[in-house]
Image (cartoon, rainbow over all chains, first blue to last red; front, top):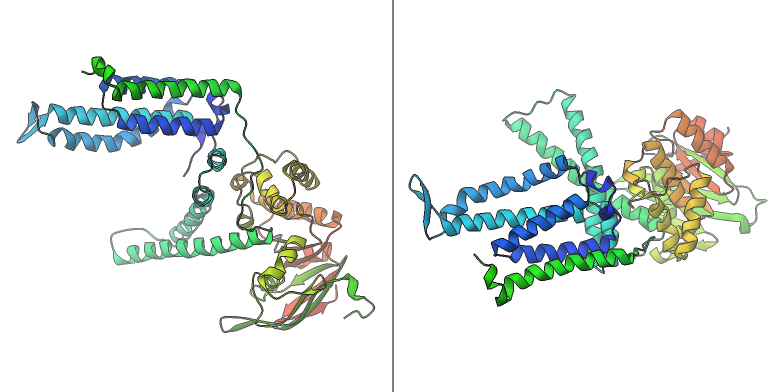
Length: 257
Length: 225
């Protein structure tokens, strides 16, 4: 299910104003996603690693999450090196791996790891509901914020409902196999989950109406950014600016290889 | 009906309410009168219409026929129920339907904030309500990670925070252990709010109410306790 282990630690980044973290994470991710220069990509990866160290994240959890991302990246390595035209590096049977292909795969690998590490350091260090509040304060359309929040809140309830139904099936000797009975039973399970979720959403709405809900959400807490946090956020933003300059302003040509 | 009572202290008056669910009649000409200071228990088997009755009082369901008078005013349209919902607190059967905010404090604050109470005051209400229910220090607990009993008590808190004139509780003891039930009865006995409790736990109702009705054949019948 949704685990929030990383948000439970203590570090400077954990206490950091989530609004600033979201802004920095956003501009950083977009910039890194557009980089093509290898020096800058490596610099970004180092920057992300510094952030992760700063947030004192559990190495085991970080590696586990990286493994998921790199699972997808692995498939790119199977295809990309052989899909570009250019100087041949090596051959596997009839397929030729080209230099531009390998470079492209390497770029994507660096980008995705740098971005994920940064998101882990900046976003996973805040509990989900703090992020929700921050989004709210950043004036993200409230429909989107509520959609995100209610999904988070009730996915747990729906999961519990799923386990309950699934256990009820198991105790009546249901063993999944490849036959129509299994498919049918699973279809019923999913159907029942849908119906129950719908019913529940109706009840939640009713309970909100009963407490005077009129379409507007009020927030109880306000955020405050300490001056020190503003400075840290500014430094991170300067880094983003530097890599952007390095990538797109011609004077960075010296760096290209 | 008690004739000595004057109209002033009648809070809820239901007259010949009919309600059918699909083709099945649930309430069949039900009449009911609820006065200030009363503590009423509703007993009845599953599907007898206890929840339906509550939903009708809160305006979540509209009766097929019959008259509703709450706080001295007839209530028909959705708009008529805005005041009703502000002054009657309804505790749902499943706390997971009620607790949707991330933290306990925010869930308790939801109602008072909707009523337009300033934020600083709401924070005071939150801690006072938690104190009253013996849940001191629960402010920042995550609602979906609470135990069943804690969830129940917090959902009562979310409603009490709105300082209602009447409390409606739908099966409040469902799924609770003896200790939590005892805790809940103690809390209810110490309240100075009038309330109606629907339950099929007769023993519990006899402890916390002073008037008992049975929902039978879509009507309310007084039970001698």
